[in-house]
Structures are given as C-alpha cells and as structure tokens.
Image 1 (cartoon, helix red, strand yellow):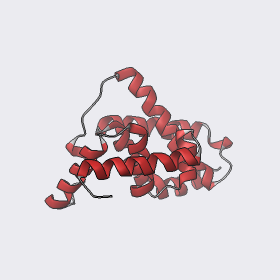
Image 2 (tube, helix red, strand yellow):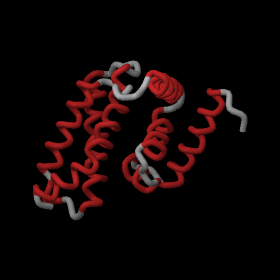
Image 3 (cartoon, helix red, strand yellow):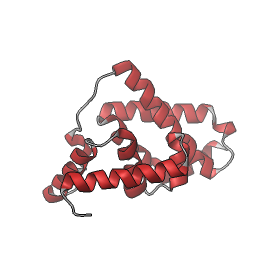
Length: 158
C-alpha cells in the first residue's frame, strides 16, 4: 500500500480508532500514545498490507496490542474519565453516556469491548473476532451475554 493511499484510508477510520483508543485507555494521553505508536507501526509495515480492508483490521489489531503493552507497563486500573464525554453533547446526553460507561465497566472487558465495537463503532462480528483473536461464535456470545448483563444491571425486563 502506498503512503498516499494509507492517508486516504486512515482518514476514514481515524475517529473510530481514536474512540476505540479512548475506550481502551480511558485517558486522553494514553490514548494519544497508543494511537501514535499504532500509526508508526502501521507505516513501518505498510508494504505488508494488501488492501484497504486489511488496513482497518491491521490498525485496530495494532492499537489493541499497543494498549496491552502499555497496560503491562502501567498495571494500574484507571477509572472512566470525564474526558470520555465529548464536549459538544448537551448535559443530558453526557449523563447518558456516563451511565452507559459506568454499566459497561461492571461487565467483563471482553464483553464490553465487543459491545462497544459492534453497537457503537459498527464493526462486524468477523472484524471483532479477528481483533480479539476468537471465533465469530464467541463474539456473538459475548455480545449477547454482555447485553443481557447490561439489561440486568439497568433493571430492564427481558
């Protein structure tokens, strides 16, 4: 893949990558760091990326790996930060987002990640399976069980 093509395709997924980075790190500085490291790693390996679809998968996988490297260094759990809330939302929407992320923090990380990626980021089960290194059935199960747990936490009837 050529650098110009990379820049065009990166621009299409930049916001999704940033949001995923914030979801993983729950901190703007760490999100920036892993995003930068992911871009650097992608540029180093640009010749191995076959097509545009591979770029998205490659970048999200690289971002996730960078997060795990950072986690091993820090080993500290961080609380969901107010920075998660996007400034241009009104206070009611900010409150709803905060409640959602509070609830997501109460279910397993794998389930929360699968829900965020599919319901908010719009990823397919296959893309999530590739990213998490599991089968599509496992992703389907994580989403289903995670959604059920969220409903129970929120007191929503079945």
